[in-house]
Amino acid sequence: METGTAISLDRAIVLSDAHLNQDDLHTRNFLTLVEKAAAEDVPLFLLGDVFDLWFGAPGLTFRFQKPVIERMRELRRAGLRLYYVEGNRDFYLKKPHEGSTFHAVSEGEMVASVGTRKVYLSHGDTVNRADLRYRFWKTLSKNRLAYGALSLLPPALVLPLADRMERKLKRTNRRFRESFPEKESREFALRMFASGIDTVILGHFHTERIIRFPQGQATGILAVLPSWKDAWRYLSLTAEGECGFRSFRPDAPLL
Image (cartoon, rainbow, N blue to C red; front, side, top):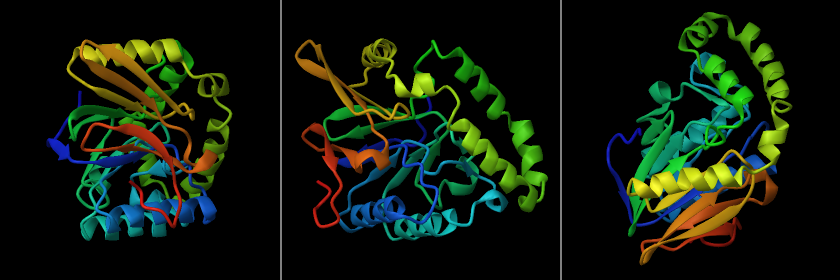
């Protein structure tokens, strides 16, 4: 389990799967949320796939992504506590973005103490062990040698190819993405609870769920995050251990 430097917070919000792909209302509201998190001093976790496709190599950054990344970087420099866990549409972000755009970047998962709870955060795309086709594709797509070779090619050649690849990815394994694997997710959460985790937070499945598990005198929580574009929803965690979904409103506080 990738933990890195210990993360200890008194509150936080979490969102996943924004899949931003142009300068539109979804992107503007996303940036407004990040700005409000900075203004209200609320730490923010992003559990992958902020963009439809995001390459760590600066030369492979799409034009519309640059102002979004730069704004997050400015807010982080100004004091926002911002954390990122890579999703299946993210490729090798840790080296170029850890310590600049984000406090920490994980290629797999993070563990943080938020208030009274120990929280495990992951994009969640490998939780469904039945999705063998996807797991095989991920092994191929996350090949460092292939990515290194891709990074050496001219951006004018790579970016159009990447754009076509992104459109194909939207059609890949739709059956698994649209059907939440509840059994596999419950089993995964129970394994995490047995290791000392109190709260498991996953993205990827584009569905909103909170499932509570009695654990003696305590309660284990599995939270699955919806897609940002569905209803601009995010998960809030408080110092008292409360965990619940909220709808983003530009005129309302985040917590």
